[in-house]
Image (tube, rainbow, N blue to C red; front, side):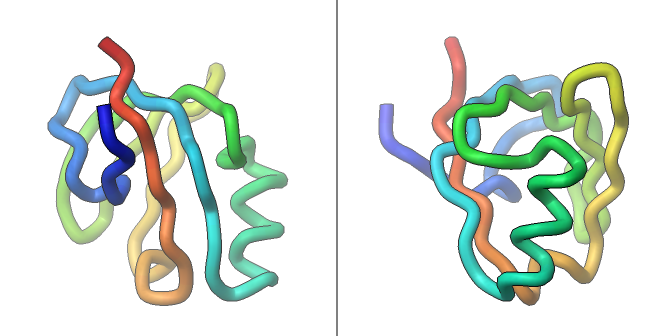
Length: 76
């Protein structure tokens, strides 16, 4: 399966992060929060401000999408 942008995931869909690029400060902060190459996450709620499950945490990402690109590979 091909890599897609994070915001293309459907609610409830799991994926593996394949690339995080863009503003180095944002990429670094996302890494601190667990969003990095190889991590698995679940899209809990789609939208301009999406809600993700990463490990035991829930993350809300909003305006961060304008400063970085998160590519994922859906997990079947």
